[in-house]
Image (cartoon, rainbow, N blue to C red; front, side, top):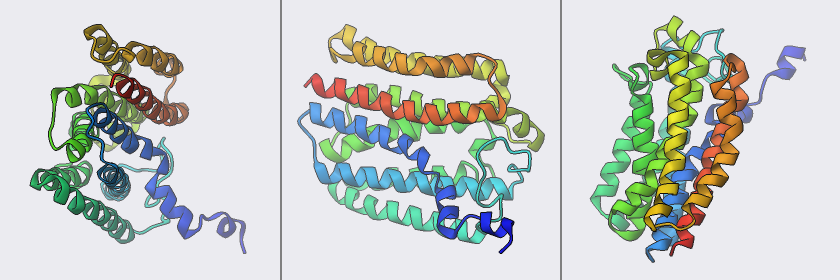
Length: 302
């Protein structure tokens, strides 16, 4: 066996590469916060919470498969790609296989959605279908939103606001201003992950014609956009303490701020290109830690 053949990833490793399990923190964060608000409001329901988590994981994996194959087909993943390698780019999985995987992931999300619709009614099904559509048109379709500087907005809305309030809704049967307020910092932190990704890819995205918000804002503007999102993520919990809604919100914000400081220093400094890959992974971890700290503060206010 040649050295190249020996080094080639197995089929299982190829699917793991395409699924990008490190991104699942962005799916877990909103479910944690939505469930925390439900616990505070004495509306916690275990099975809907677990179904929401399962559905969120499936949606994230399906979105990852979609991004892998559609970016490849559009020529965005060139040999100059600065991010982690992708399965279709390396020829490890064919576009057909990835599209089948995408369909399977979204199908499993729909299984969870059917149960949640039975629990929460038709609005849950509508939100689920909209989330699947958003995941597909992010990089697919005739007018991919991720190629027209709308990726940050859709991430904030669907992976932040909708995910948190949807998790709360399937347990409490209603949507409240409290759930919305709790969702805002989650939307900010999960969008921060995309911002680092876009910051890293500004040079290659420009060459391939992929217009992200990072391309529009430029490197300096994108770095300040990251800082603004972090400020929102920390200000909302602190503000909840000032209002008396979540007494430990400021403590959670302080702890999250300590965790975020190394990230902010890297992003606001000269770090660029492939050197941002570790920052991207660390930002994904931060999104989860922030969500857990924010959730703990919310539950403690019960």
